[in-house]
Length: 469
Image 1 (cartoon, helix red, strand yellow):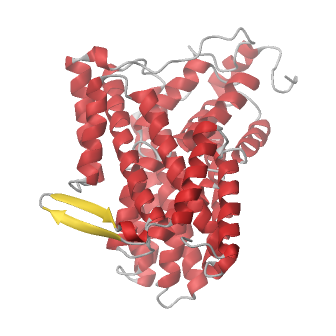
Image 2 (cartoon, helix red, strand yellow):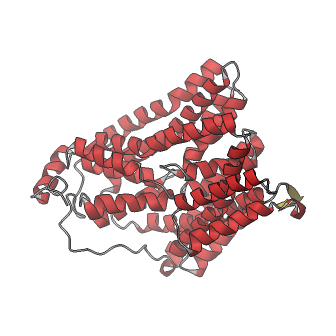
Image 3 (cartoon, rainbow, N blue to C red):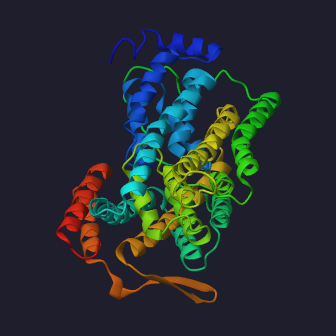
């Protein structure tokens, strides 16, 4: 550890930070967040692990319990918890400026990379080479989402009641087409009831013990300097809502309330409020609306978009940028299609991530003064259990559309089933899925490495003229 990363008097630095809101120099923090932003592959688990290693273990800027407390709050919020954790930690280290820098840098590389990949997909997606690459990526996504189901289940389903809650959530979505927000609300209520009447069923997450290293700059028992207050809350709320709503209102005035830009702005603004449990949990809802209701892209393209988002740094919910890019390109109105695609993608990115800053800056001063709130923990446990069922529904959706050409919807009131036609099975896609599962579950390769292999396999199969691409 260098002298710049570990000052000689951490307690003195923490005391100064309590008064100024800046625990370390802003330039030093910015360099650290820039480095972290290019390592955020592998979904929220990998992104949180990167911040854990850099901020808690290596630089010793924040204590482990404080880091876990911030993470617990972020998991309770709608939106990408890893980015919100970056905003929260940046706020702890450098106040509002630190939170803005940390949150922006966390998503910026992914925004730029996915814009470029979306443009390449639109421009060259019909060529054999590009088709083959995406045909290899799509089956790999099935294995990746299955891994997410296993990881979340292992961590959260610690009691038969929670297993039942996960199964009920899966059935509500996959069989009865219950709206996603209703599933999340019911799960929060169920978690609260379990916490009240069966508290032993809710086991707290395992924390990390002290490792004997140097004390962190922000100790676990320190309080942030910024006090919560009514005046501060109203000021941040008003500013945040204006920044969030003005771009949507502007496109509604300039392009009409029925334009693709207005519909995307309104839809993804609403989505940002219900993305509990991370991107995997809400993608089934986004996929259903974007494909079936709005017709912005096809089911196969939705899977390809998720594969693209998996290959870029930043939150996986960035896939909504790809959805908006394709939707606006195909329905540009009076604009040039490429200009429309760029406008739709950037507007969607804005309304998706601005709420993350608003939630943290509003709630963090209050959360700093809460310790061990049992009601919040119980509701969070219920939501987390339901997320397992939600992700399982997403895995089923992607598997059907990645492995079969035709998927028909059958209605048996009140049950609705999506049944693939067995005669349209894609054998090459199935083979790549099996290989991806072996790489991820058995050999334990990273997500990015497995995606690279599967993309190469898809490209090889397309150039060889194999069926099922």
